[in-house]
Length: 138
Image (cartoon, rainbow, N blue to C red; front, side, top):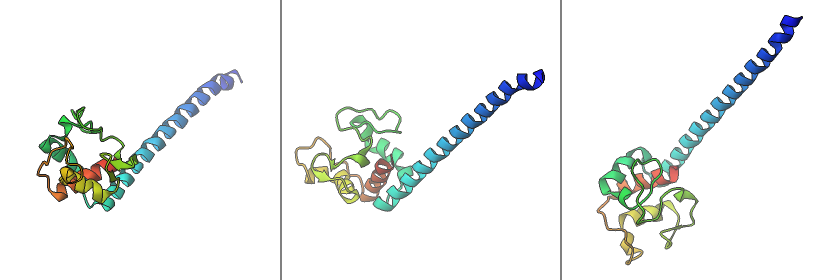
């Protein structure tokens, strides 16, 4: 009897470890699933591939002006942070936040706001779609 009682706390501890482990696995799976769903939705919305965006951000120097989540070294302070862009109402304060507007802004920001500090980078429409997909997937 004493042996059964002594092992009861061990069983409780083991059960708790298993529950915590299962909970952590569920949360991790949910986060991965959510990230995959966001990326798939962003691909459909923009016609872009978010996986190509990190190289494009680096090629055009976007990280020199913007903070961009998930891009190492993208901690620029000159332009607006691009974190949680999908939750914003406006792009650069001048365009309704829609995929077509974001792509158009990235390609030709000065056609919408002549005084913007964002340069005409020469980025292609497809590259802009890839960047937009990445930003909406975050």
